[in-house]
Image (cartoon, rainbow, N blue to C red; front, side, top):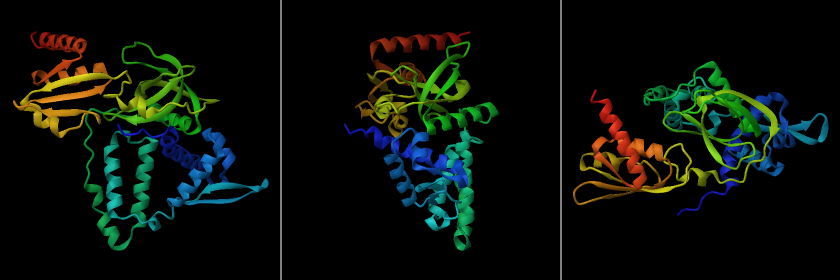
Length: 336
């Protein structure tokens, strides 16, 4: 089994992105290392390393003396004039267009608008022959959205923006959350840790205040959110280990699962990866024996039912009963 990243290494990229957002918002006033460390709720040494990494990557960072303290520096993010000089070309721009198309469900949110701004600036920085080559890259990838959550509503965009701000500054949030099986939203105070996308939807990994359990929250089910002034320390939780065995979005204890797929769907199952730890074995009759150790009982049962009679959930036995109940409901619905 490959070694998991240490939490500090896994946190470095999100923290650098948060640092960039803070400097962007600070504008010409800039921020000191101490101020950044306080906002990000981390050590000054981490901030100093992150600033060096961003500068080495070509971000237009500069420092100047703090007018109120001669021995202190303020870090400022200048304009994006250096993008063209950073060496962007048609291939890199094409990859950005691919990312933009894949994230189209985030249209009009801060994340997607920032990506569109990057694309515009890179295109503007490429002139002459390169510019002519680049003109057609926007037409290579076309958004093809199906079965997605739209974040275009004003209230949902505001919630997402506030959530990103809270994660950047390590601030607790108060929310009202409407779970899938609830009739009314319930209040909670959360420590927002990470966002991830699954099936064209955004999900939040968070801890409840005073609880150690990491839970998954659908961002579109947050009905109200307020960023508090209460900071929180990054919990010493290996999030990679928490999500490693999740089949989908639910974080549950892993279970040994075996599914037998009929020959008529074998090619489809072979072509696709449903879980990074899965094992597939083609049997003599052309069927596929699929094994994985994962959590997500509801998701796996629904997945098996989606194949109709071409998939059999071999184990665990108690989940087979769920499949049978689901199949009976399907039969009853189509027998009316």
